[in-house]
Amino acid sequence: MIKRLSRCIREYKWAAILSPLCMIGEVAMEVMIPLVMADLYDHGIIMQNMEVVVRQAVILIILAICSLSFGVASATFASKAGTGFAKNLRHDMFHHVQRFSFSNIDKFSTASIVTRLTSDVANLQMTFQMMIRMAIRSPMMLILAMFSAMRISVKLSLVFCAALPVLVIALAALIPMVFKIFDRVFRTYDKLNNVVQENIHGIRVVKSFVREEKETKKFTDISGSIYADFCRAERIMALNNPIMQLCVYGCMIAISWIGANMVVASGNNEALGLTTGQLSSMFTYVTQILSSLMMFSMVFVMLTMSRAPLKRCYEILTEVPNLTSPDGGFDVTEVPDGSIDFENVSFRYSATAQHRALKEVNLHIPSGATVGILGGTGSSKTTLVQLIPRLYDVSEGTLKVGGLDVRKYNLQTLRDNVAMVLQKNVLFSGTIKENLRWGNPNATDEELIHACKLACAHEFIMAFPEGYDHKIEQGGTNVSGGQKQRLCIARALLKKPQILILDDSTSAVDTRTDAMIRQAFREEIPGTTKLIIAQRISSVQDADMIIVMDNGMINAVGTHDELLASCQIYQEVFHSQQKGEDE
Image 1: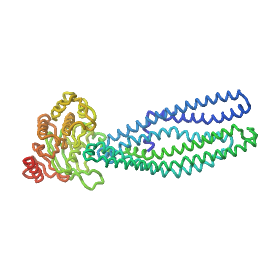
Image 2: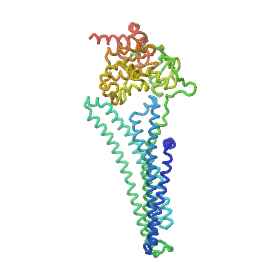
Image 3: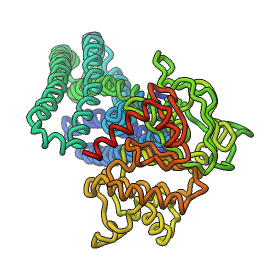
Image 4: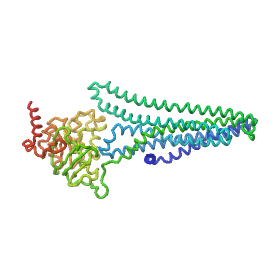
């Protein structure tokens, strides 16, 4: 995992290398300061030698300035490396998500992907910055301070050895308990994001059913769960500080007692034992050594917290897209025509699913034909058409477009030639013109207007004061359902596709507008194969062929008159709708 994520450092590797090097320089300066202070006290102040005092004071100032410079440089490089790492990681994850098929996305919830791209990456950024600074500072301070302390007195340095096992045992006991809690916390964050996303997306439904209190309670419960887990983890980690303080003060008492006896015994003679200045330096080294151990424990805490985000980001990066363009010579970059052939096609939404959404479908649709698709809810009408642009791959059998298996086409080529207006129409924040150009980024204004006229959208667009520069809010909430559908149809037409799929895309428009759109299709794009999923028979009765779906299978195929004479399902739908119109 670490090796895979380390690739995201890329152009920031020099900053990641220089930060710990500068940190080593800062630590070295800090460790030298107590030695200079001891010399200043023993040979300058006690001996009343102003020359030594001035010389050592100048050295102290130089060391302090160098330490400050190294510290600032280390922090700057760490900040640059950390934010750069996070930027590259988000880019790699988002870019990889764009390659996911629908089944890959189904594996991760939308809320989970959002959490991984935001909170999880932010946690990893903090951990990375700490690793290249504190994870270097802590062991270097421990090693250099211990070495310097041993140079002064090996006997006094043995006091630290008594404190180390206590700290190690405490960390070994605390960290496993905390890890389990943080692992649970990050899974709960997914639920929290899901609740927020659902609530904001469906705010109109929430308000219309007066369910604000219930949604607030749902949010409060999950937020409270995160609060409780964090408090539990912090209570456990809070034990680390008193244990550390116990070791620090215990070491100070031991060094004070032993060191004072050594100073008295030696008569403040450096050659005989220990001087007062050296004893004061030992107190500084006690603080440095034990604070480095405390810092080390904080690094462990951060690593514990980051283990779950690390795993979750790694899962996104290593998820293998199960729909890709073929390798080698089978990567076809041209679709010859809009003919469609289903040859004994069956489909399951997952390899482990027992139920087949589509069962042994055999169908030929000639290029340029207008095809209507009818069927009850759950009859797999949408599933059938989603296989054509390879939003999913067939589980069994073969699906051909233009006489060639869809799995042999370059994905971009195939999808550029198959325009699909989905059941759930999606518009993005921006102007109408920007939304339409999703279909063709290079479309001229004249092409935009022509496509909108075919989709019967030009008239209502021109009613806006800004016309085609009218701003669309996120999700298209400031236009009606019918207007949104017509804009999505116009966007699809701008692709000039070989195959046009309308998945119940005129359900929100009146029958007159629906008829005008279909008439425009017949006159303006006769060579395009048109597949129209509809609930109203009036929307498809003029089609060249009508497919009746039932329980994932094709029940009947024929024209309006043929099905009216022979298909029971079609007859029932027709008579029920006819009766409704008469009433």
